[in-house]
Structure formats: C-alpha cells, structure tokens
Amino acid sequence: MLIYGHRFIQSDIFYHVTNIDAISKTPPNSTIFLNFSEDNLETINHATSNEITLALGVKNITQIIYASSLGTSFIVIPKELAKTAQNIANDYLFDAKILIQVEDESELEELAIIGVDGVIFSNAIVKINS
View 1: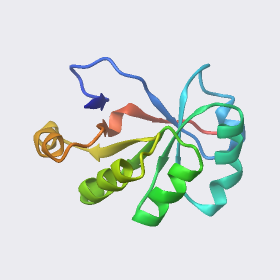
View 2: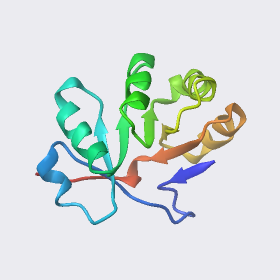
View 3: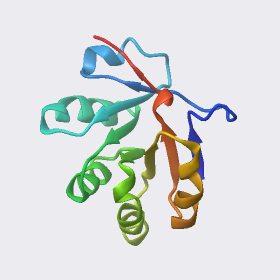
C-alpha cells in the first residue's frame, strides 16, 4: 500500500494547482494535483503532454474512467468509492494508482483489507497559488 502524508513515512508531496501558470511554481519533477473538471482539461492535457506526473481528484465513477483515459498517474477518490474504484481499476488494468483520501490513520486497516493501491493524507497536498 502506498502511503502519502503520514508522519511516520517519508513521501512525495502533491502540489495542488489551479492552472498551467501555477505548475511553473512547483519544484522540478513534482506531482501535480488537480480536481477533475471540464474547466481543468487544458491544464490536465498540458501536464500529460509534458510528461508531468499528475494526480486527479475525482468524485464519481464516471470521473474515475475519464481520469484513467486522460493518462493520469494517480486517481484520488473519497473513501466511499474505495472498493468500487479499486475493482474497476483492477478489472480494466489501469496504469493509474487509486489513492483514497484519509484523515485518520485508523482508516488504513479497512482500506488495506479492501486492497486499495494507497492512501493520501491531506497534509501531503500543498496548495500552489498562481
């Protein structure tokens, strides 16, 4: 299980950006985080076409499918979609890893039993202003 943002484990930071200009304010080889929306498609396409590691926050199954098709590396989802999302990712052999947003380490055991790819704590996502 991948774990991002836990106090015991050294991990990468995800940089939450809102547009293409904000990407230039992140360190080299950063993982960029965006919430999936049609308004963000230009930034999403810019990131993937420039081989920038991308994590997309999604809210439903349809967005999970879109995120995988757009070439994202990580799909960040709410806990209530964990089992369904991981099953879809496994069935369709997604290249992207499914990360569940968690707030407390007590959630890890349940998510490990489900077999999710990983978890991300909120402190692993840093907002970058443009």
